[in-house]
Length: 217
Length: 215
Image (cartoon, rainbow over all chains, first blue to last red; front, side):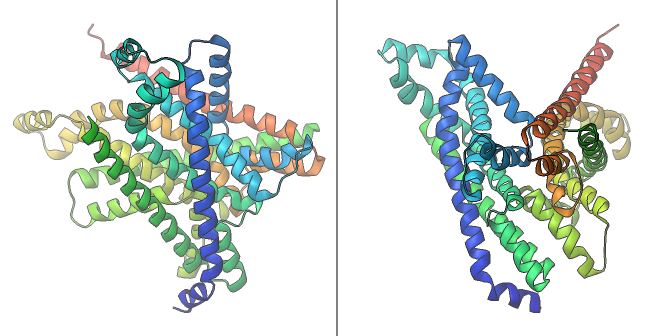
């Protein structure tokens, strides 16, 4: 029982790790979603060269494990003269990695949008960015919400890898408490409970957005 | 990068492949068992499976590996790094496999079960002869997809000291102060492993199509 008392005494460290996990995941979600939407425009666009380039990027990211990519950003970029602290390079790795996944799932969702919606948009004089933002994006984004939710859970889980490059996120906090006081069971169970709570929040949000999408139809 | 560095990364690949295969070989039937427990609504087991899937789906493999490796000795079950790694990867892929099998089982037409019962088949017989062959076919693409994700989550066990591709490449990079060549080699190796799974899936699907065609 003393294990719980020790973790409770160190709740400050645990909670700041949790806050870091939430911040990292939220920032990666926002940036990768926005940039992924732009990449999906290239993936679905008519221009051949941007489309090939975007597809190459997506395929490459889908072959690399996140940890390898995080190492690549953390150790590889200083080699070409870009120096960052580990929090920032962890965030950049999360964003760049997930752009590809977001782009791919938005592309798939875009594919299932009936062509007549777009034709109707054309008939009403929408084109280019206006067509994308007003006609294509809303139904595509709503239809993609469950998949975006899954990917968000994936982002949260991937952020745990950043403990290996010493980013002070939740798993790192749990490890640090466990190595100081030797309470492995309680500290990791606490971390897992916090991850689980976070994912529950996301699943609730997805269910809520699902009802919203249903109401819009 | 010296020849020995390349050799050490290939050795890492060997452990990535064997860990992935071991966890897949254990995790796919384990997931099927869990899914069947839910499908047949087996009393105690079914809610247990629900909470297992919910928690493990939300748990990073890194955290799970740390929990299993460092905390299980507390309850008197001490595993060496390799068994802890296999247990971690099996549990994490098992949760996703459960959901895949369950999805395939839910889509299975009930009337086939009724007709199997009408032909006097026992539950076990209808499961083996009617349900599983079709459900396997329906679940295969998603299962292979999960296998490729599984290969990509093996670096999580580096945290408990397993040297697989990523960690081997990291070591070479740290020693030579030139991380890009080992990382490039690691990327190539991962791509090869992932594409092997995709090709295997296509081959199985083509074979089944030919076998399913009327003579």
